[in-house]
Image (cartoon, rainbow, N blue to C red):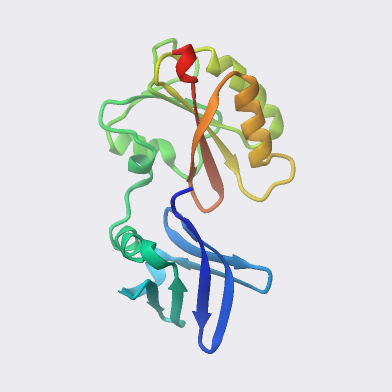
Length: 203
């Protein structure tokens, strides 16, 4: 996933071993005994000392032991890419939106001057974003997979933490449609995006 590491967090005198994730706008730690989420907007300062990411907020200091990734993560926290940039959408990129937009994504695309296509538009799109808030919405994957050519991408955007639609279901839907999953991105605090492309043999 790139922005995920096995490490530890120190909170005062306590130290917890688990998984650390650097999402689009927040830093997350998870283990059976302790969970922590810090939004970038809450961070007053962030420093790197010998592989440790030292994060200061109004609630106090937290130390993330992430090793060699520490400096890279500090830069991403201080200078985060926009969601559109993380998804590889540039000015003029033809993008198709399928389903109900989440979190003002279309507004961000318009601000970045992407070329937004309607779901029914037959024009080729470099990226199609399929918003699937239920497992039944995954039935559309096959339809839009058939439209892909060359290195065009189909992104499945689905909600986190729901039993009726999981990462495994989204991956299975893409693979059944003949696609290959190549990337996962934290789309928002509530949604995840999976990127699918045609296998090289089919391009």
